[in-house]
Each structure stands twice: as C-alpha cells, then as structure tokens.
Image (tube, rainbow, N blue to C red):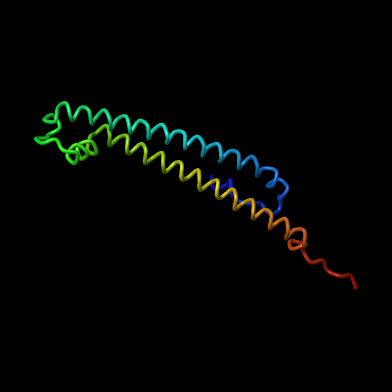
Amino acid sequence: MDNDFQINQHSLDHELIQQPILVHHWSTKLAEAKLKLDAALNELSVARAKTDQEIRKNPEQFGLTKVTEATVDAAITTDTIVQKNITNVNDLRYEMRLCDAACTACEHKKRSLEKLVELHGRDYFSAPTPTKS
C-alpha cells in the first residue's frame, strides 16, 4: 500500500499515467468496504432484534429476574452473538477508514505530482552545466 503513494520524480510521466488507475483502485476498495460495513450493520441489527425477542420470551435464561428496557438492553449488549457482530462491525469500520485514508492519500499524491511537474517546467531539477572557457 505504501508504495502506491511514493513518487518517482524522475518518472513523472509514468506517475501521472498511473494516477487515475490508483484512484480507481482505492475508490473501488472504499466502495466495497462500505458495502461490507452496511451488510455487517444490518446483521448486527438483526442479531440485536433476535436476541431482544429471546430475552423477552425467556428472561430467566439470560439471568434476568425483572424485565425492563435497561436490563434487556444490557443483556443484548453482552450476548455472545451480538458481541461477535459488534467486533465484525468495528473491524470493517477500520478497513473502511483505511481505504478512505488511501483515497485521501491519492488526492495528496495528485497535488504533489502537479507541483513537481510545475517545478520540472521551471527547470528546478536541472543540473548545472559547466561553462567552456
């Protein structure tokens, strides 16, 4: 991943040609990560709803003597299946944030390439040549 954002100043033409490919790659990965996160959030919602139903049917099975919204919510949150879904959502959120950071890095690379091309056009990278006497 880190190599995607390094710039070879001696090959700006190649870097500029590769830039749209890089942007497309990371934008696609971000879209896929968002899709996975949406699916995981839906799974979490379903798991919470199913657990809520089970608790209300058999509160004793979940160690509850009194069924209140607070005790049901606490029991849902501590349920093993719900916890696994929460962990999955958090992992996918992290993956999505990494892809989002890569997309941001693509934008920074684009701006850097623009500035390097500008410097190149001003002979910033040219080497001094000795004068003949």
